[in-house]
Amino acid sequence: MPTLLIADDSMFQRFQAAKVAREAGFDVIEAKDGAECLRLAREHRPQALLLDLNMPDPGGMAVMEILARELPDIAVAVVTADIQETTRSRCLELGAKCFLNKPLDAADLTRALGALLQ
Image (cartoon, rainbow, N blue to C red; front, top):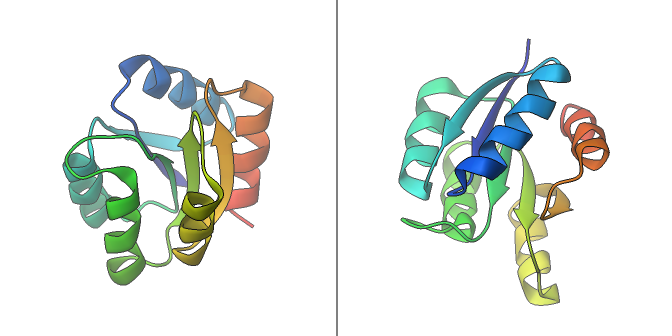
């Protein structure tokens, strides 16, 4: 069973995403901030990461920069309420596979999770 790391400072968003991911067949681990995300990514080596860009300590973009160097095989889906084109371009440069808008739609998340494993 593939492992998904969900990194979001919103407990509600993590709960909703985890429910959908478990129904899609993922083992789920959760991080409430960037530091915990990096620690869990290094420890568990998940196949996929659902990453909120607007998180504390460090933010999602910094997490992506670190993971691109250290663990480039993790497939990343970026979650955000609003994304500028420059931010989107930088995320793609760092290896983001897809983008999801908040609030998360269960059908969109299920499709994205399948795409992350392709």
